[in-house]
Image (cartoon, rainbow, N blue to C red; front, side):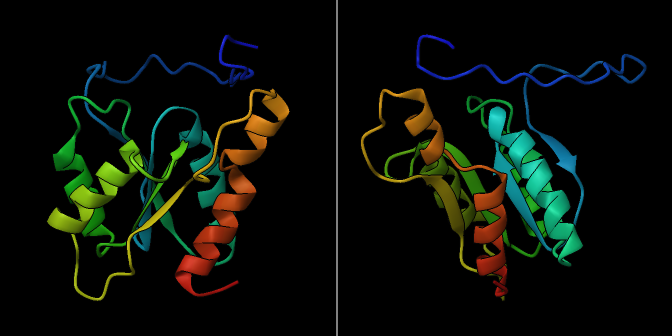
Length: 159
């Protein structure tokens, strides 16, 4: 456990060193799909990939955009990805919904990318509450694959 009471994210995977070297900045589209896009960074990218795979079984094909960093924010990639998805975007983040980076991303999308006929912007985050010190309680507030899946189903109009 780290000093913030969270268990470290341990993801074991093969390292593919055959591709081109990527720059440290800018976002990365981790999954290409057309019905909408899940936008996040850090640990929740992996949750979004899993949710996107399970939602594909239900007929919802969602892209996953990994912002990788917030400053400088890759607005060009956000704009291109959200527009390609018809303006349908969901920001998933660990922070409280009010006053968070997710709110800023949602505001940017609402101002720059809103497509005609798009679903309303959606944010999935930690409820606006105090964050408990106990790690098991803390983890229960952070969005996980099941919650992301259920909220996307509701957003897409199927529950």
